[in-house]
Length: 309
Image (cartoon, rainbow, N blue to C red; front, side, top):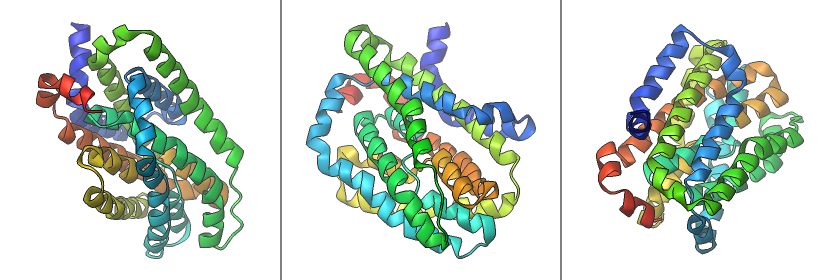
């Protein structure tokens, strides 16, 4: 019974995520919000355990797609975030700017896998985008914000190593050695779905404590909507089999990275926008994963989904 429930968890991702957001409004957990990186690391591990070596090898044929997913969102969203920030003032304006120079959301890799997309491609884009964000983000923030933004690049790199590199290496290594993991794909997807639900709860718990919540929510919603612009270009130009993967990789930006850069560059209050955005972004990602790979399709055609990647 527990395994059947776990296999079915991914099919309940959207309602469970919405329930988690409501629960965090009623009974928030500041402790979980502060430890959300542990949940992200678990999500990366569950996702990596479901990625076969062939999916990573296929990245060699996708160099142009990986480069586009790394560079294009940064180039487009940084000025878009600056323009949105002109509609607000103070900490909210600065917080939106940080979202524009953030990397791809770590959880996007898990959501891509749940949607039936190419988790290998998403991983490649994630790694590159974090490097670009860590190196170019502080410079762009300083230029757009008119201040010498003091962002600890070493801290961002250390976070990436602990939250992504270590669990990723562990998961891929185990998957390469244990072929029997191919038979528990449903269970791994269920664990990934539950990790996303916990992330929504943690993000909402953090946002619940924020000040200027209404303005932050408005700015976050505008940025989320504006992120659809580069997504539309990707959908128009990318090969059919890569459209869903790229859309999620571009649309979902890492709210934790944005919060860290905003807090270090402009002060703690500037991180409010990122926290609120995190909730909206994760709920949107959960809805997209559910729509792209509904339970009926997941149950009937698992072989087709895995073989197409």
